Length: 149
Image 1 (cartoon, helix red, strand yellow):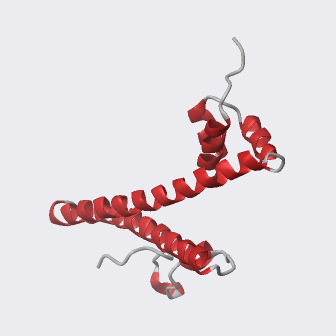
Image 2: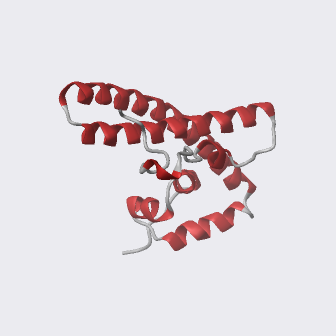
């Protein structure tokens, strides 16, 4: 059985997916090896049309990712509300942690989007938005844990 062939559009879409996720998971999902992704990335530097297609696919995924994050945040908030009414604090804590993570990701997406729109230089918004909440050392709580009391 010969090697599987992908169109340039499909390769660009898979590379864009890997750029927003992980190489290992993306390669496994598409039945290719990580080395194939590396070879395709090298092509980005030599094939202008391929690089343009990759940029277009990645931008589309970034927009869709943001839309999905907003939907997920809404689902998690509704689930948290249900858990508040019927479950113990351990379940509430788990969902609250997930809501916090998705909310932070949405903040990062907003910062990246506003930076692109204003033409501002791109700094690392993730480090600013995802900085753990400072708590007194003797509080016994881990940094960034939601206060559910």
